[in-house]
Image (cartoon, rainbow, N blue to C red):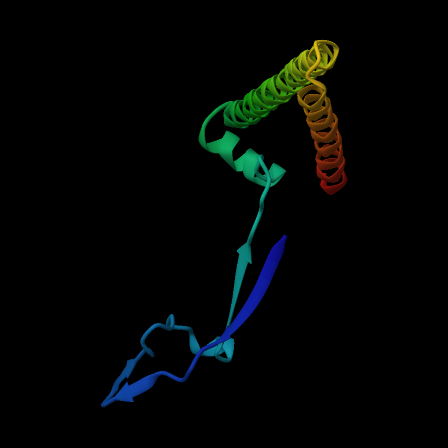
Length: 148
């Protein structure tokens, strides 16, 4: 994407017989009618434009190929890092589900054991807290998934 911007040169100051340029403004020949056109280019891409690659090749032999190879290697490296992160998140999620299910089962079995051994209130509280906890985790997980 290229942006164009025009700068109008202020008249030069004359001191005696010497013409002094305005500070901060380039000196412009008088045949240009006092208009200076400047062009700026902004690019956000991993590779330069094809014309720029040609200029790189003119300056350094095989520079364009080296630049393209460097961009490909960087892209492959970034993709491998992203894959590692996704794999680690999947592994953590899987083990979180397994451990959560195991702990929930242990708590329910402990509650049932308490009920069968005559501690009705303790067993009922363990089972109830376990069920409420599972419901809370389910609702929280559903809200998080909706945000993503």
